[in-house]
Image (cartoon, rainbow, N blue to C red):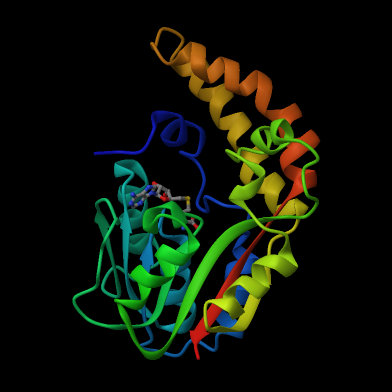
Length: 248
Ligand code: SAH
């Protein structure tokens, strides 16, 4: 069981697999007023940077579930490196339908809401692991500018314009679901560069090391296309952020 290989290659050197920077995750932990012992579950935890740094900086405990074998291994290593392996646990698994044994203070899905079939389904899933009055964290893109055509939406990596909302629409969608937005931290274009541009050198180095791999042609194609696509579309049209929600 694993995610498509292109991600395991292009994001193999990433600590954070979305447009957030270490500073943004630190801000998020601070504004949520994390305290020692706060229990956090993270579905699609990637290489574990959020849980590991929050364990180091705020003394949280947590569990992360991720379907990438590589990212899960990296998460465990990172926990050891930061001296928090006793506080955070990483499980390599499909997080679809995953519910924690022990209820959590914070339940997060940061950039992987397909796990619950979309934002609404992911909120429902996370709620099953959450204590009453706990906080749900959703990390998700939104349109900075509405793409004028479906083709442009596809060039941003979406399947359709309807995949995402504008920021005001997205914020009011939580209201309609019966949630208070109690905090939000938004990524910026610099964050998008850290996420997207950081793939390019990784892919280039991978190509040099693996010229005869069956997958080299695919990686070569992506490395040729992605930089221009990023500056023309993703960077301009897509916003991203983490939204903290509490049920009314
Ligand atoms: N939250 C992390 C990773 C976001 S990228 C971070 O902020 O860095 C999306 C992650 O979802 C990837 O790590 C990918 O491996 C994982 N993923 C994709 N499908 C999944 C599934 N069905 N179950 C668990 N993890 C999944």
